[in-house]
Image (cartoon, rainbow, N blue to C red; front, side):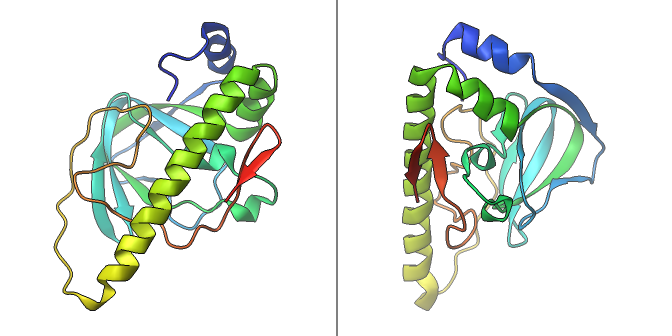
Amino acid sequence: MLKGRDTKFVEELASHVIGQQFPVGMHIIRQGDIGNKMFIIKTGKVDINVHGNVVANLGEGSVFGEMCLLASGDENLCRRNATVTVTSFCDCYTLDRDHFLTTLESYPPEKEFFLEEARKRLDEIRLKAQGVAAKKDTPEEKEEPTERAATPTSPWRSRKPVLCGGALPFRIEVGGHTIG
């Protein structure tokens, strides 16, 4: 997510990062809860569960919870799309929404980048939602969780499309532009 971004922008964000540790079995975030920060796994592993099904396994360098940083308006508009459960002791970095958005205001090119990323992710979620709706009349396939490398632009991507939530209960706003 931050790879290739303006060095000063990343340094400013880094000054607001807080370390947190989570024991095995802990739910770092729960599907449906209101989100206001993102997480970057320094060490450890987590499972991503959507409606009780493990859809991905994340490890060192992976990012999760970032969509809630870009949600606009009422905090109730950004509900978590998945439950994240620790499977191996996790040392994480966290960044809260207010610091992220305040920092973005000083970096117009970064604002544009994150607006485009939000559009892409929102489109991905919509396509996945349409695919799931189309499959409701067909027998369900058992999806195996997939281990994925830390990919800065696609934290939810697995081998098969998986819906990470349901209808989109939020808007995305970056720098006065709203999508969703």
